[in-house]
Amino acid sequence: MRTRRTAVGWLFLAPFALLFLLFTAVPALSALGFSLTDLRGSDLRHPLAVNFTGLDNYVRLFQDDSFLRDILNTALFVAVGVPLTMAAGFALALALDSGIRRLRGTFRTVFFAPVVTNVVAIALIWRYAFNENGTVNSVLAAVGLAGPNWLDDTHLAMPVVIALGVWRNFGTAMVLFLAGLQAIPRDVYEAAALDGAGRWRQLRHITLPMLMPTTLMVSVLLTVFYLQVFDEPYLLTDGGPLGSTESVALYTYHQFGVGELGVSSAASFVMIVLVALVSAVQFRLLRPRS
Image 1 (tube, rainbow, N blue to C red):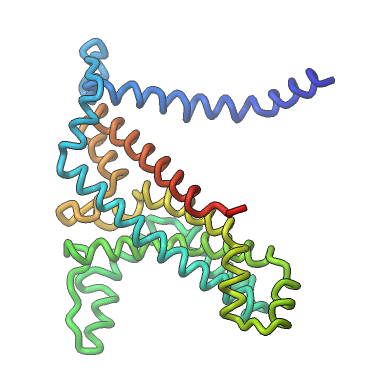
Image 2 (tube, one colour):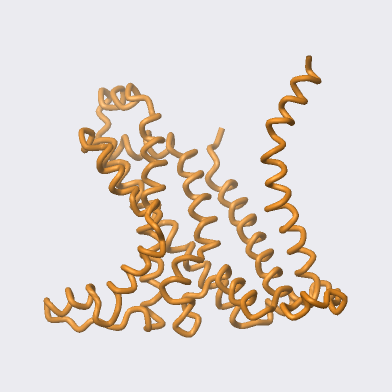
């Protein structure tokens, strides 16, 4: 009976396992192999011309000022984007859970809409809005202020790209936080209120501690997203101006585009290591204490 159950389990698992092997495991192992060679796009027709170079591509990456700059850019995406997205999502979830219960479904749909809207369409709207003659500068002109060319300014392009990332993802954080808030027993709040605890003390001593598992999950999900951020900088600025918004993922794409397949593969594995390290640190710092 146990053997039969095991066989049935593997039978149901087989389609996923096959897809995982074909589209994830095999490409990942191939990319790891490519990262240890001098493979270029022109070598695909002459595979025997490819040479094993060991860790040369990784050394080359960390000697490349552009790659080091992109690591700092990606760190900025994470350091600014994750807290802003979590704060916006938590604030909206708190409002929906406590004060706007009748229209909760409507507001939840409205706030979640950016998550499921086509990112290309969103980026086109944002590019127009932040154009030199776009909507944002028109509003500023109406109050007597001269607006800059946002996406062509090395100091202003990054905040616009991060703002787009926050706007696209706060709906995900909101839905997850709202689910966590609704899972907290209401009698805990009633008991605290009977003991004289106000809203602030309830938030600090009940809501935040009991919401810690949700906070950990949201933090990890958003951090992984921002570490791999690609759509926003690619569609708004293509990493410009002067590389000020280029992320590690976009650097990988650009290297692939110019035929540096070995370097591109190495950069992708550096990104995987960064995601694993940061996620491990978050689990260490945010996991609930027993």
